[in-house]
Structure formats: C-alpha cells, structure tokens
Image (tube, rainbow, N blue to C red):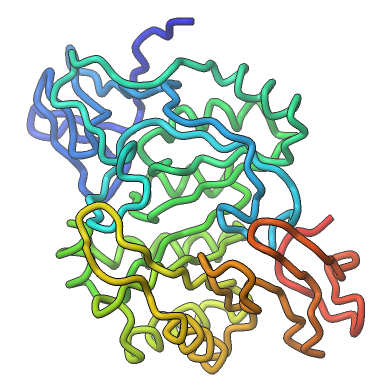
Length: 338
C-alpha cells in the first residue's frame, strides 16, 4: 500500500524558510532539503514527514524490554520504528537503523508501509496491551504515532525516547500518551554536546513535564565507563529524579562496546554502586539493566522490603502486586498493574 506525502503540522514559516518545531533543534529547512534527523524535508513550501508509516522494525515485545517494569508487567507491546533520529549518540545500540538519514527529499526511504489501521489490527490480533514507539526516536515519526493513537484508545501507548523534544510536541503528547521510558544519558551538558550533539536541559524539561502531567515515566541511564559513571554525576541524576518524585523508576544499564565508542563494558560493581547511590538519594525503585539474573532486575516493596516482582531478563517469574499494592503490607506501588 502506498501513502501520499504526509504534510506535517509541526512547522512554521520563519523569515521565508520552513522551521520544523518537533524538537529543540528547530531546523530551518530550504526547499528540497531535509532536517538534521534526515527524514523530514521541505517540498513546495510544506514540511513533509518522509518516513510516515515506513516501518523498519515491527515486533511484539515484552513490555519489560522497553524497559518498563511498572507498566502492565508481563504484557506484550507491539513495537514499531522508522529510520532516523535527532541525536548522534556515539554509543547508539540501534545505530544501523537510527543513524540512517536521507540526504535530500527525493532519495528513496527504507521501510515497508503500514497504515495506522494495519498497526492497530496487528496489535489487537497479537493480544498486545500497548503499542510502543521505540528502537529509533519516536519524536521524528510523531505524526504517525498520533494517527495510530487517535484510533486505538482501547490500547495503551508508549514512547521510548531520548526526551529531546519541543514544548509544542510535549503539549500534544500530554493529551495522548500513557507511558514513556526516557533516556537521561548524563547529567552533564558537556556529555550531551560531545557524545550526542545535543543539550541536557530539553531532556530535563521533558521528564518534569511528563511526570507533572500524569504520564507514567521510567528513566534509563546507560552507564559508560569514564564518560558518565562518576559517583558525583550519578548522585546528581538520582537527586534530580528524587526531587521530582521518589517513585520514578531508574534503570541503570550496562554498556557494551558498539558503534563509534570502543570502551570496555561497564564493570558490574559500577552498576551495583550506582543502584546504591540511587537508593541512597531516596529513589524507591532502582534497577540493573543488561545484567541477566541480577537481583537488581526485581521489584521490592520500599516499605516492607519484600520482593513483589521477580524477573529473569524480560520474563516475569513471580508477581505479588494486588490492586496496585504490595500483597504483604498493602503499600501502594507506583505504576499501572493488572
């Protein structure tokens, strides 16, 4: 099925040039050229979402893979992506699809077309509880996500995002999105500039606004040796999250060498120390990521300290939450549970 060119509403005219308003870059794009993300271009005075519906990946994943541990644990989430990204992370683990970019508006784009209706049908047939916009950055295919969301209110909708988005996009997401896992890659603006060619503050803004609006959020930090793993920086991340709410789950993931960074894998003791720092800062739920079988994969009640969700990788082995509360002491647990 072929889709006609999709004209984006996330644009404005700025001194005779079209400006994209989806992310903080606010690319000003000349006719027949594309923005930094490489999937949005200008044609005949209109901003075109060149990647609309052109999926490079579609899988029915465990929700734990996002990772979301407090949002419908044990359920499946239909997960989709197009090519492209608005960041240039040197450590990107999905670089083969996220770092593909068009050089001009006439270049052929990778991906097979699926209409929003087809995605909704696939999700329902696969008994998916949610649809996740993931793998690459959903900001750059937001129009497609919105067209799916508006026709499938029976499903939940999840962004797995770098958080590098504009207030205009956030305003619309607050009315449509149910949950998000947001990467907080570092608490250093210098790290963002050097490693991702981006800035820190827009990400902090996204985290604050999502939580304040009642969107379920969880945060992921990929711990990279000698770049963002100092105790001082980890303490700043943990204290920032705790200042918003001690309920926000923080996933601390182990780095493995990939793409442009050739650094050793994160030592396991660094992951454990980061968890200790997070808990010491008052966070109630701090998790180990990319460490199969680690105790840090499990959820513990912050009140009685009993294990209430036991996991092995992306599989839930034991589940002791009833009506959103710890089975043992009746303490409310942050999240959405069945």
